[in-house]
Length: 448
Image (cartoon, rainbow, N blue to C red; front, side):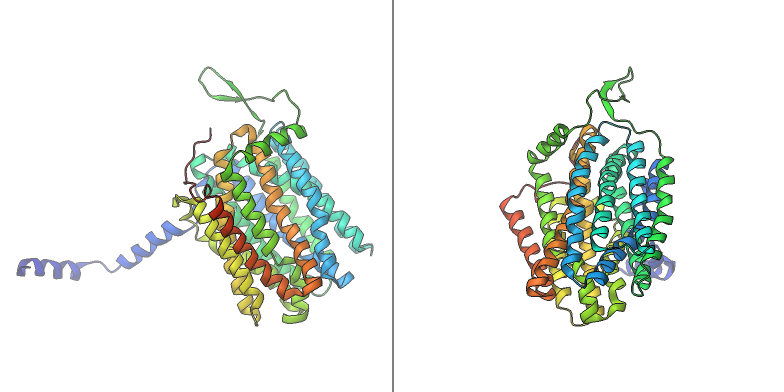
């Protein structure tokens, strides 16, 4: 290298402006920070805002009900029974609600289902305030709330592909799940301050108040009637109400579509394994009471959500991953192992950290699972697909509550917690190896 070349390099280094590292940091943040492009679309903004705010209130009830049940019965089995009380109506109404979403105006359907959820929260408040919160009453109201939740969640998931471009679906799902997890972080932490002193009525009152926001946001959505196969002169699909009414026959059609698509049923099977086997939620009241102290209950419920929120806020890379199937499998295995390790943690901070790692992995797997489904299914099947999706996503944890509570009653909370996490990681690995279709799934698949 000649003197002139060396001199030129020295001069270039000496004259390099100082802010370069800052530009590099900004570029890194732009690349990895959460993708907010879907917020440009007004209908999505309204749906996002309503869901994000009301989710904080839902978190209050999600913590208050199991803690109240444990305070009344002193039994993790009764807490686990809350999962069964919600499971059957949740699955049935998610599937039926998905069929309705393919036949009705999705805005109207979402508004009605959200109203049912709001009324159930008011009833939790009333029975607690007047001293009628018996175990069977809590189970019955949990079932009622699950009916509305099943319909509303299936409908909301089918709305997203209608108001967001296909290229932004992964980003929209990341935003939705991040908002939910942020809300489920703040909600349990605040709820923990109330329920540890038995202020259950206040928790339900906060939920009922905040839930009015989702009613307003849903009311402001545009009409979302199903799309027919009829096209106008310009070749654009026009909205029309299909002649067939929603029925269980349409539900079976949706299930048949999934059964004939290995990528979809594998993604559901792995998620069921992750939630049924590894979710330790039903054990939190007992573990907090016996190991970490009653003041830890809010932190335990919030830890998974904190990890998911952090993963969501740094999820700018998610849309750029092509091998989404592989990413989903790895995330589920990491979830199981992190949960198992948390069950062995001797101190609270380590348990919370490991649960947060599991929560981060869970968000990644959930985003890819939802995006794969929305990419595969045409609009006329979106409602039914989202019904099945929510039945699995929400039904799995409730079966997990029963599994954890029943197992803890026999072998204790530690074995129930740790063994479930390890089993989830093993089952996910075996499924991925035995059925490689999901691992081969790329990031793009034409659907419509």
